Amino acid sequence: MTIEMRYGLFPPASRHKVFVSYHHLPDQYYRDKFEKFFSLQYDVMISKSVQIGDIDPGLATDTIRDKIRDEYLRDSTVTVVLIGEKTWQRKHVDWEISSSIRKTKNSSRSGLLGIILPTYQMIDENTYNIYTIPPRLHYNIKCGYALIYKWNEDPKNIKQWIHEAYIRKDKVDPDNSYQSFVYNKSGDRWV
Image 1 (cartoon, rainbow, N blue to C red):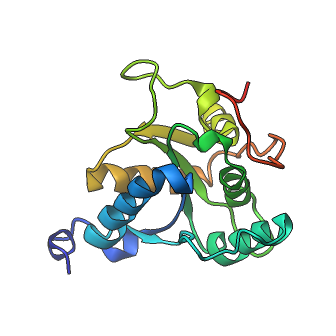
Image 2: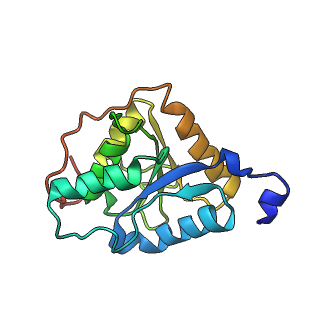
């Protein structure tokens, strides 16, 4: 039992099942750190994420999408997108966001938030380029379904962000209108 749980700061009943979407190769360090801090050390969330090697990348696109939606996203309640330099280019990130905000007969939609990683090149201290974050995430920030934050290691902040995303999912309709990626994108920005 962690100190936080012992003193009632993070009661297990208030934890959410969180799916973390990220660009595997360059951002693995921060994804591992995020899970270690907030799932294992501080017990803020229950991780529902895909681990490296869980899904064969050689599978057909529709099979990968179905596996992510049915095996990982189905019982998650919030999706956190970790945003590095090239996260916006990844088809799997786009598919994960799309699947997580879609309500189906087998699952309800998840809350959504983005966290800008320290590796991301900000325009200035408080400004990111909207065209270098995942487009579907941008659409949902724009409609009020999602919020975006800068990397933070304070478990109270992370817990609050996750809980607020969970609450928003039932109060704001998501925007899933962006055309799904067929392939990974390239270039410096999506527009």
